[in-house]
Length: 297
Image: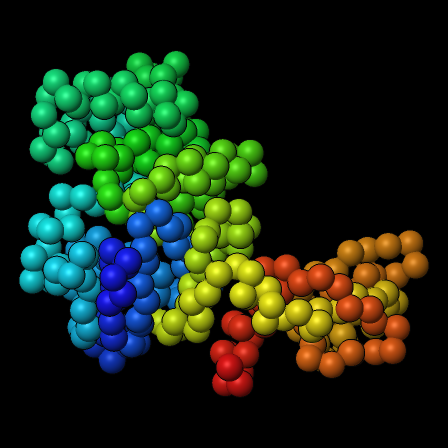
């Protein structure tokens, strides 16, 4: 573990019977970083988040927080942990204040301190005006914001959020991403998602994961450099589109008056009329996931 890393994961594996949910995952995260785990559904992200949150035990490997093995001393991380699971449930008949008071009691936050903290957090997540409304009447985005408020009740040094923007409309998604970015400060934020724009917008480091394997851990800039000069655009007739998709890794198509503009990732120029364009994080993500699936990574 490097001196500046607060959390270090080494050789982490998790099996459910014969099924390997995670295989030999290793990474480190330093304070002040937002670490985004990006991968398709079923990649093992939620399993990893539950292990980091000490809800599930790993089959093999170690996780240390400031040098302390959390499997042997789980309380060392639980006291500084905030966790928003993918399936976050609320009590629909409670209002926001009542729900957060209940969660504060579970977390052992002192009553007087809890009242002040709840007031502050409702302002932070922009729900002060709706604090007396029953949670059952909240939108999906409002429930997610209450979820992040409960995760912050104990002012955690480690914040883990699992697929936090699933089901949110575009405006709520942007608002939630901005909130996570504002919360980083000197704490570690670990985010898991299958939505590229979520990590592209806020993550300082990105870990690509698929089929339980960590494919790459790098900065967004390094990931983009990996596909520099390998992303192409050209226009094809609509009738030729399916053939192009069968032949190349297509990341985007746009219908135009003269045909279909194709964006594809390829090591070599696909056709003479294709022009090289600046890569996006989605291009890099699709290339690595596709290579891993085909066994060429």
